[in-house]
Image (cartoon, rainbow, N blue to C red):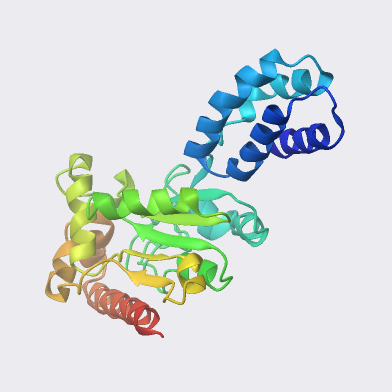
Length: 288
């Protein structure tokens, strides 16, 4: 619809003899500002009164679409079951399109809405439906996959760990003139958090502190400026807290009762995998 508005304006500027030079200049200013929410709103506030004074059909047609003059903030929001797993092909298709869309993935590491089944986002050692003996393979790194396109803005956030980092990422993703993918750590009732869901902010913070989850962002515009597009936002984890973090959630502790030996091996594997992933981010951050 906003493309249609621009086409109408371009046609009016080229062919309409009734539109004043001031109005045509304002149309050109809007075309240049249309991708920016703040600027498009400011220009629209000056453009609409001029359109209302116009008598030509072009002015009337554009006024009918005046609700589209200000750039909206539009986000596609889904869970990890959709993004990592059953809907990954569709998500990949949208990201690969190069269109200016924003996607927010709430990563609960399990199919939360349909009963707690294991997904490709479920990490090693976690118990879920279809993984009652603990997940045996690594969690898929959706963010790393999206980064390979090179033109997709990608980030991982956790509001409990850093509200500032999350807000900065959302602002950058919104402003980026292409596809954006933000993956947020989302504590879930299926995790069986000791103390209940009132502790989600604390859990989100502890997940980052111990290395279970990592904060970072990949901004292609940095590369265009001659900088490393990958920025690791979280500090060096305290790996001594990793096992204690797992033991605060029933999805891990339930395995210790059912199969203690398997639990020990899988929890070790979970920590090694977290270190492996963190080291891969370090390599990205140190790349020149």
